[in-house]
Image (cartoon, rainbow over all chains, first blue to last red):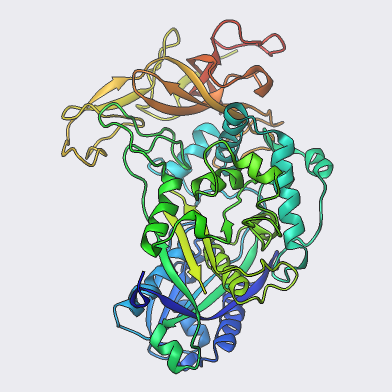
Length: 398
Length: 156
């Protein structure tokens, strides 16, 4: 991909993840402030604000872009707000990137933040019998971990994954996150401790399912020319943002659906949805999985991280357990996955999470990830997906 | 004891037939695509412009694609019994329709009784009750040979 299609990352910032119980705007402002300071850009010089929305904080959350802009002080900047569940952050990044690449602005701020309730995520209230997300809870009691567990059991039956493998993913990520100041959980765990935690959705246990967290993340993005004029001659760049939908027929059961598509009318396409999310990013960046030095993937469950190894092309289908057992995806291994500690150490702050994944890659590629650094990393990929079919994958290089 | 009125927990998603209930899907009259729940407006096959659908009962039997259980009480709007009774849940492949559809598993069957590839059949069971009504939903029940010996009774 030519320099013309890249955007530079001038600054990254995060508010530590936790259960702080304050307004989401505070976390977003803290993250934005850090990103602006790191970038050396004044808020008043930001031409475009891209907010990633939260649906859990009332009307200001639904229009997060303007909420953050107002809190930072109105400047007349152009603004957008995006909601795509877990993929909201990637949508916001892509909105800012598109504005920059189209030449409509030079420098943009991307912000996402959330305050979450305790326990299972549940649908918006009311009696809403036309909403599949409401209906799956009502008619089946199917929570998000229900779906994660269906995939996990599939891995066990098809590929011989064991509960110990899933626990080992948690152990790895817990170790990765030990020295990450933004992680909510900075505590080592053993396989035995994981396997002794209560079963939530068999075969997944409490320590293997990501918590719901408060947190905020922000990025200052700009054109490569602007970065040079700003004195940053070799910036970390975003080389691809994949926001693809599935292709029909979608043959793997996905939240919040009751069924997959049928294949009776059209033969199944080659790549699964999650594979296609990364494929589109690789194609856009003009690279392949062999070029990747590290990855931040959405480990909503420990077992789901193994699915991502295959979906982003780190190995063939059915080989993820071997990759894990060989230590390839551990810090110091061939291609560390979730060096930040992942959702396992963060919990999920929905609109901030896809942005946080990119923040981590930026610090890794700059060599600033103290205590969790992937040595010599040049290229990283993030992967994630949002409810109903929002793909999310970002490729970052230095 | 007065008998409660048995009503479906949602209208039009399945036949209220205790002997041989079936999920009700839609079949696109243009391309033949099958959808559950029913498609009512526009065919979701991107190569089809179909806007007319015939209601079609789905196969009553299939094979387990995967399964799990709910160790913790799901949040609202799920209406849980008090005290909460954990249940298994599975995704089932229907061969003729070439799709996978989810549903709870009947009470008394837990994950230890289930395996990928097991044969299951559709039954109706109570989802929840109020003073006057018993609300019905579809559930999956292992067919012959599955171990339900420790079950608390398998509803017909």
